[in-house]
Length: 98
Image (cartoon, rainbow, N blue to C red; front, side, top):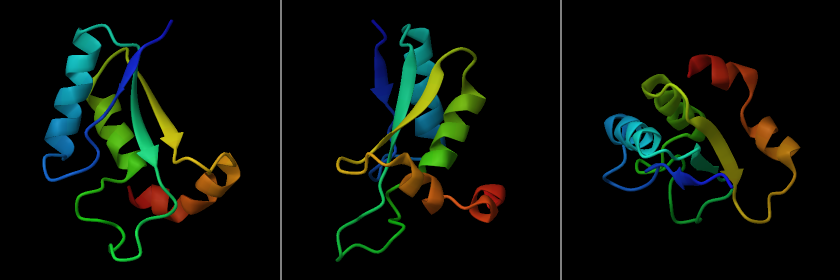
């Protein structure tokens, strides 16, 4: 069985340092994976991107740069089983800017 954790991608305590620290700690503890969420929808009253929601691809990059062996993975928000829709949300130009 593989066991992983979700990285601190949301909230005021999240950030590049917290994400890297959590990924390193997960690796040190022997977790197999670190995860992030990818959301295509957000509350109407919230600006997007939220200042407290880190981009999933950037979050995975920070985690990968800070670790050696833990796998970096993403999960889609419920109801978004079509991976094509998530891939389309991350255009090549947007990814290149990351």
